[in-house]
Image 1 (cartoon, rainbow, N blue to C red):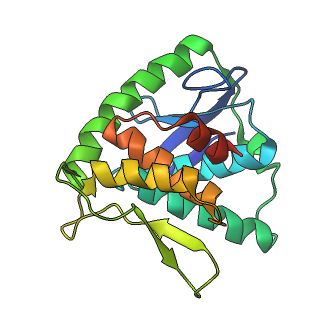
Image 2 (cartoon, rainbow, N blue to C red):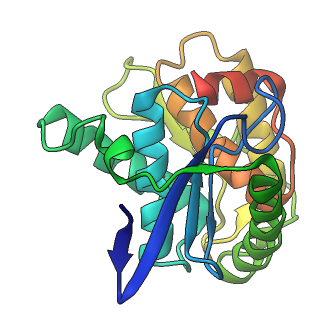
Length: 208
C-alpha cells in the first residue's frame, strides 16, 4: 500500500540499517526522493519514532518549500496531537509499507536530499554570519519553569550561524533546561541546513 497526494502515488519503504551514518552518530531518520516518489524511513527506530518520522516526510511532500526546522516542529506537534487523542495508531506505518530499501538506495536518496536541502535552506531563510550577543536560547512560559526556545533568527528571518552554536553550548551546559530534548531536535535540523555537525550530546538527546 502507498500514499497518494496531489495526484501522485508515493511508495513508503523502510531500511534494515540506520540512515545517514552509523546508529551512534546518525542525525537523519528519514528521506524523501521527489523524483522517484519515494519515502524511506529508518527501520531500526522504535515504532513510535517511525510514525513521527513518516509524518515529518509527509509534511515535506505537502510543501517542499517549508524549511527543515519548521517541518520538524509541525510533524512533532501533529504526531503528539494525533496520538494523544487516539486518532493515530502506531501500527499505521506497517499498514502502508511497500517493502524495504537497500543500503545503496538509502545512500543515494541521502546524497540527493543533502543537495536539495542545502539549496532550499539557503534560498528560503538564508544564513546570517554576523556576531550574536545572546546565548541562542530564551526562556518562555511562566518564570521559573525553565522552558526555553531557540533564539537564532534575525529580524529578516535569516538564521545566525553564531547563534546556533551558542544555542548548542547553552543547551549542553544548561543546568535546568527542562525541554532540552525538544531544543536538541530543533537544533539538529537547523544545523543540518547550515551544513554544521551538532555536538554528539545534542545528537543523542535529539534521538532520545
